[in-house]
Picture (spheres, rainbow, N blue to C red):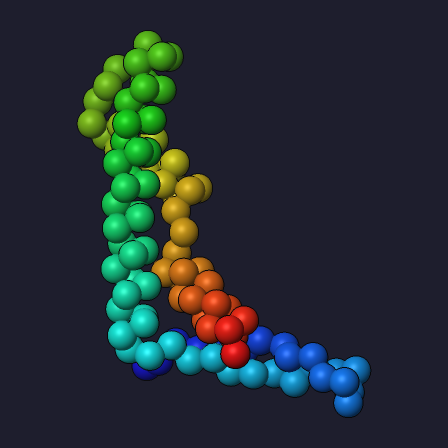
Length: 97
């Protein structure tokens, strides 16, 4: 199923915007998903490193479960979701049209 997003397009003829659907091609979707995955992998690595630094700074035991839980919490706060990336790509296409 193709990803699409609707954007308001202003008109001189009406005070109400016309909604324009922007659809990503399958190739665009896959490219966005690859980029998102790469960025999220980098982000998770940074989160693991930050979690390890936090454990050391606070003198906590560096059990793998603690490290993973902290990293996961950081990741959930920081990570962008695939839908966000796809919406951004759709907005980029909309702005070009």
